[in-house]
Length: 424
Image (cartoon, rainbow, N blue to C red; front, side, top):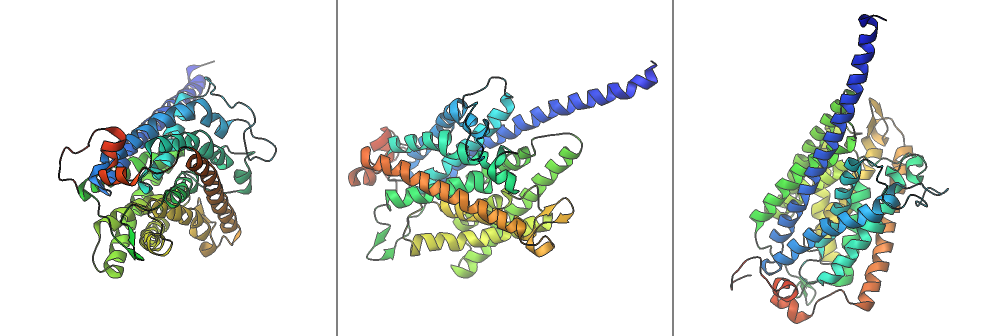
């Protein structure tokens, strides 16, 4: 056999091996970017809430990744990717961590689980027992998120995947689950002292919008790994697809920021920084499900409308439902996560083929997306009510009024994030 006949085979084998190596590297680097999002959430949540609770916010986010890492490694990954039962609803074997599984994949999935948990943190800021939050985080990352995540991301044999449900990087799987859990938690814990008096809604300004802005910049940056890494491969067509995912993610975030900016300007009278920040996050959430099934133009409108939706959703939850979500987490992640999942059924694409209602795909994909949205919302709400209801009857959810007024930094942790006697 001559060199000329063997050389193509050698090149082909080398290319495959290189692609596998680059895939592992791409997923690891993407996971590291998603890990950094914990810092973004910490800054956003602490900047948008009272300074006397900043250390408590930091501790909750620090434990999201700490508790989430161990619980997902020990049990969550197996519940998500272990062999499914006949219904495709839950894993029934291979539940414990298998050392043979690629560490890059476990790490990547772990930081997603921690993201779902940290969404709850900001919604219940300033009045929740730290011990209660840690226990809920444990249940969310070990059981609640992994079971429902496996409905689609497990692949063939999982009930939503078999229906044809699309959620590329987790608008529903990650963000809606965390968002609906946050809404339930905020409702069950109750509003902060002074939020509602005599039927009036009183604003409780954040301590440092500059920190909040920096937090959103970090989230935006980390989201390139969140969505781009979800391609789960690098090399050839996968590299092109991943680059497209990153580009459409950036477009949607920018559109979401503008959508919220102009909506707040018209609806609230001034261009609100806090609403614009929420709009950028909403744009990112809105494109997360469809970033692999959306044109750039489609991503623009998905993000733009996500930014509009988040402003009205925050107002509705705060003023009509009288639920005190301290940073608008339920709106940005839960409500807009549902929107981002549904929009695939409106103008999503599969390659060059329209699969949405408005681009020739009919109603079938929209129907499947609606089933998925309802399933994730129901699962998150019901399981959160069960876990938080049990905690409420046993150890309680809320700190005392005295502790809340003093601030959770001192009363829960014995130290302040900002060493000042003049904290707002």
